[in-house]
Image 1 (cartoon, rainbow, N blue to C red):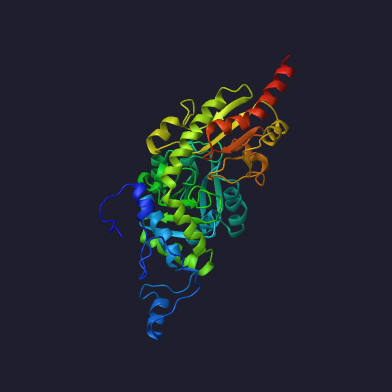
Image 2: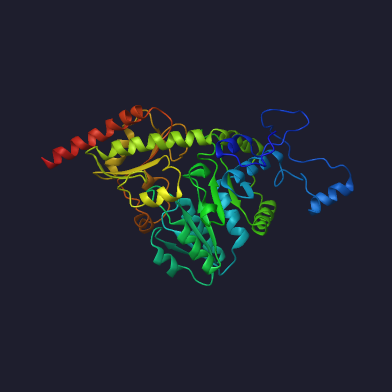
Length: 404
């Protein structure tokens, strides 16, 4: 195995980092499908259970396959430590349980994933944690929202689904001045396109379910950090509460990481072509994609991202009924709320991913009734455009008749 002591490119790290060959000298990463581990003797068991010596104890919190995925992801992010969890949402919950207590406040960008909004505003509020929602790009609003009790600043960038871009350096500075942790959900970009730790983030959140897997097979999440004390807090919470990633899922994600750089480049290329095409269709009112020069966050994305991602959202001329009709006309795209898949997906955020938050929260996040989100996959872009054209042409024809 390469010793990985010299600097390596992310394409190489995606394939080589984190692997520890066993005595069998396997070439592919093994799956350790075991719930428990055997100790050399009673003293060895006591030492490992107490933490006096390192080693495998129980797969709820120590498993070689899970650890290999954690190490590879942390290395790709430029971090020191990672915690793998059962889902992206359980990763955020694990973080909250580790660092928050009753009376603490958190500042969260308004346009995070709908379930993230619900976790902070509904679940954690029951335990005395207060959440202040802030417009992602409004730096003065962030400064006003942060106070002596603020423990976390939490953002998702690019945002879901309108692809707003956070100023990571400025938000990190606001967090540091307040003594708060700066947390960045990096699900859209992955470490291939963006490394938040380089811009001052303390914690990077992943839903491994998305691009890290890449084929929609398994559910999982992860947290990446550089601070050992924070890692220890996260690890102890995972050990106690048990939102663990299964060894099989970790193995799938680890194999997914091997092709992540190739896939992310292809997702970016296809999404850019689709966004440009959508801009020219008469049924489309507005396109949200940071790769477009007209996007408000385009220049900032150029500075802190290595690509613009595979998510394209757009508003049509029409109502929710028109948006649904357009979606229902597709034959190739998958009508599902997941993203990051090799298969292109299409969804209506207002009635799916963001349906459980209030109308006011949807408006603040820019989730309109005529907004459609596409997770651009790896099919040929011409075929995706042809599949969308059917519904878009119907809308254009209908609008033309109404105008006439």
